[in-house]
Length: 369
Image 1 (cartoon, helix red, strand yellow):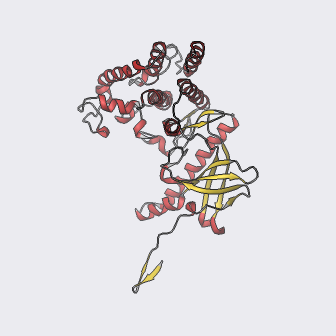
Image 2 (cartoon, helix red, strand yellow):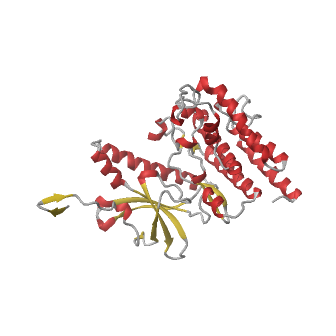
């Protein structure tokens, strides 16, 4: 607060999470520059709840990514909106603890296709316990996320795309086998490492079966731009496999579409659906998933024609087939066609991993890069 012209005025101050540059955390992590949460290649930004930094190990000099949870700014907005500040503080601490718990599960199970947390802790800025900043230290992808990787590399080979997609499928298998659904699979959450390949990042919107969190109550847990049709129309699906894991699968098919057409499935659906069917969040008039489903299926089949330009033809057909199984507008039909009809249906993502393996081997035999 400052005095000016006989009055007192509040001054804008940086929140504790925004003042970590130059500090050494736990006598191990030297905090370097702050990076924008909108910057391509920044993993797991956490929206308005966190601040991102590059840090380095004081012994080795190797760089990592720091996700600092910004409780102060969030609570300030809560107070300004006259919400229950203590309830919001509980929500924030729960978000941090839950994400840390998920990473501990991934670490204990050695999930190699998930971005790894190296450390977690609390920093008390200026030694003031009221200025506490919880943080996570994660692997830093030297190639950034897959958007940055595509935009900065002169030419991404088809083989590299197939390998990265295989890596992501393996990551989904690892998460699902650990009772975790990611719910926010999108290009900015796929991190590319020169030596380790692709890994799935940002578990901030993930769901752990049997432990519902605040975002699990939302119609759309992750980014609405990548949500499956049933969620966009506000249709509630109850079963875990249908609502959570089949959401991951839809987004995975959209990732395939993005890598080979430059557009996501939802972007293409938005361009294809008539306005009276398109959901209201897309500027349309449609408000029923069930009534819109036949039109969604027609639009989906038109979109798959985009894959016909991919060469060789055998790969075009295989990719189209995988996307059709992963991202069908009817959530009940998502999954490997050979496994979802079994007595105890499973998504069969392992079959897609095998498909990508076979495509990679065939490309090597035919000398295609």
